[in-house]
Image (cartoon, rainbow over all chains, first blue to last red):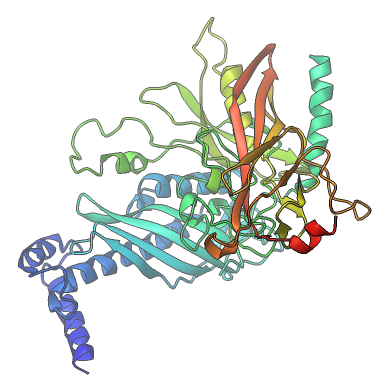
Length: 187
Length: 345
């Protein structure tokens, strides 16, 4: 029972501290917190919230990346500056090049994916800068259509697809740096 | 040249068996999906359970050898049709035509190179884009634009097994040849050969042996690879006016038997036939265990078969040789004492 209470408290604290700096960058908050961490092994300590914040922000960035891609995909705007909001490096390149191919092929994407991301690891433990996420995305209602006549690009349905992503804190902002999306039916 | 073309045509038939898939999926992730358009990052998903590079020895299991120049069929779960991750039979990449595109990489692509912290200064250097055309478990960088390197992003369509892409695939970077005489910029044959090499889809060897379930000390073990694992594989990359074909040929297979010894065979080995007497050795690829595997972990020897491939290319009046490639599989062999059989004489 005591443990459950501690967890609840932790979440409340996270809520407070995230709201405090009133911006998406709670790095300042993280810094002061990590300074007061007593020791690495104190799982019931409320101060693990630094890691919780990191996990939460990384997950937000991950979902943001697919939201950005979903939006750009409606016109296959491979050059949209919004794509770089939550993605960087190889992840941004893959999305941009993929949308370029869609654009060239006269395809656009409509609808939206469903995601259920889970943090599989966060390192370093006390103040994570790299968070790995695993997801079972669903593209059933996020399909490609022909731009010219609005018809479905093909008769293959989407489906559940295993996704692994690496999210890093880069210059204070969390961005997805790499991802792998597996075949339909992989989760 | 003509003869080469004929050879290439003959060879490409060999890989027909490695089925071709239509280029694009369907769902919104289709153009970034690893089984269709592998890209840097796909290695994260290889073996979803944890990206093990050296798959623990298991019967029929396989893994592409991690030697620097390795390549392979890519399935980390040998022959497991029901494994979702990267069990894609093939990426329809035997014969690809490239054309220059107007694609430009967004600025943020280079950012990861600067994650060390200092964001100032010359962030517009190279696009850190290494494009893996191979399966994630056997990643090969097709091209890695260097700072200031002249070149272009090419889109491409491929054909394999009689199926041609209906749509273009996402662009990859190909450097230009040094400009001479004001002609149109295009890659050198050697650069194109590198692209062709990365398109090669080598089959992952499937280990076969007799006796099937359990080897016996002093009884000859026959070793061979499943049919279809042994034959030349080719891939062609072309831009308007230049076409280059890379050909991989298997030259030998090295079997490490798990007891400290290994056997090198110059061919796939002879399948054990039902009419063969158990005590006769394989004519070309066999081994006889001298000790039982009882003391080994899981009471089995970890056996691996590594196929060595020579890789050559030809096109545009030039030829060349690439470093060898390897593909490999692992299996567990249980070896039991067999007094009864030995004594029967």
